[in-house]
Image (tube, rainbow, N blue to C red; front, side, top):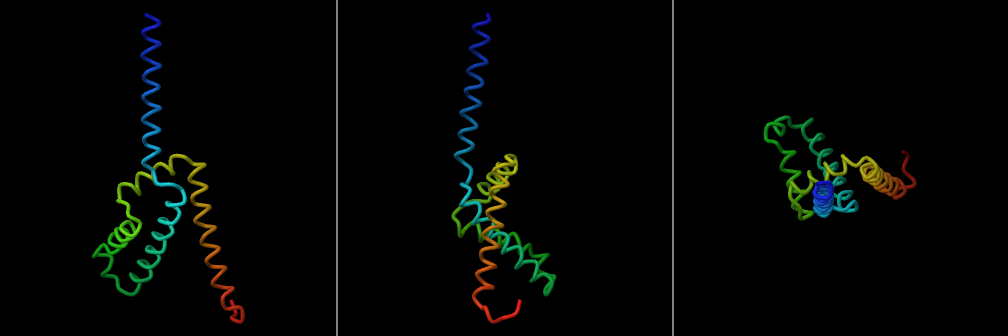
Length: 122
């Protein structure tokens, strides 16, 4: 009986491990997520700036349309993005790397813009 119970537990753990490995294959890689999140942040920024000028955009769900455009540009679905985001969110070490890489990219772009016009005052 102990052998049978041990075999069941071992098989169950093996199947759960396979399922987790399968879930890992479905998530978007870190470098891809970084670029997609950067584009989504830019879309959000545009949306916020435009809704200050034209509040009717809030009623039209313009932000959802922008997100769908970002997904289409990167060739992914909404479900792929949100499943990947949930994965990274539930793995704090990987989520920190993702957020840090988005911030680093942002700082690099901002510094390049400021260095492009050295005679300008900041």
